[in-house]
Length: 350
Ligand code: AMP
Ligand code: MG
Image 1 (tube, helix red, strand yellow):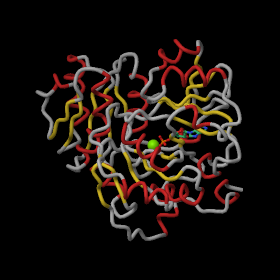
Image 2: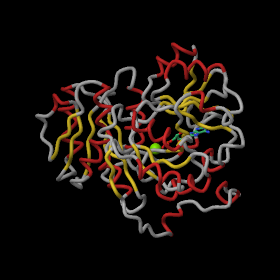
Image 3: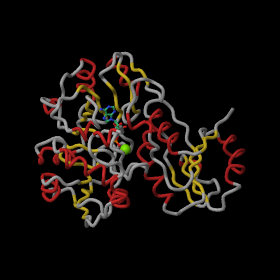
């Protein structure tokens, strides 16, 4: 029996329901209406340092289910509980493994999520029926003020429609969530620009479920060994099986920034497309394309700009979007992972 049936609700409910809600964008100095809406069990989008989140009272099962409806998220893909710090975990986690304690001490507040054994107090919808829960303490001051104002953890996935690139600005959230939620809190552009790193701490050694804002090297410095989950590994994140981060136009990823290679293969790649958009290092601005979006010159700027680049280029409705990027260490694994999932085709030197 599918999990959703076992849990007594349907997947993708939004497709069958109307969304008559008026969506208001709030400035971050007036959080009152957002906190009241959260208390009433409604869904509110808010800024974090990774990407914008789609939040609800994390201890209210009915409220958390509304997140899945607003986003069109399959009910077997669990949410992250956002807390102020480890002191908020009492009663929610059954056990805090040593590796989780170390990672929390090193990276909270910040873009690191740990998966640990849950207690029954964590709503079934948040953990998608699993006996574990994913927890993170965001560093963004607005996210922290919302959690403190609600007085409860906030359950939140990224604030995009399921499958779309994560939103890094309030207007990107509005594009996807207009009419679906009452409030979006505007906190400017998200600093990291990619989702949190997710580490399963119930295994020994710990397992990297999703590359993100904290690079693998930094995790290894704290816990020694970190195994990377693959599609076939026994431990995996339920979210990994879904298509992610994709713009509407087909995306072709050229995984090399070697000038000679790019100039040689680009004409072939784009010959079938009349109007095509290019997302590439700033120095490639001179290449002929209908539209250009520069990713800067290093992985930190590329991470910050990538999702906005995909969404901005998508608005022109190009026949194709070509991304030229080759990542180094650190955030590189996270960027490559997003591009891999977003692209229909990848080109690299032999
Ligand atoms: P998002 O909220 O869109 O950033 O996605 C949250 C990610 O955390 C998804 O990839 C989930 O599958 C993963 N996640 C959340 N809770 C758990 C859990 N209990 N076990 C494994 N992965 C989880
Ligand atoms: Mg997401």
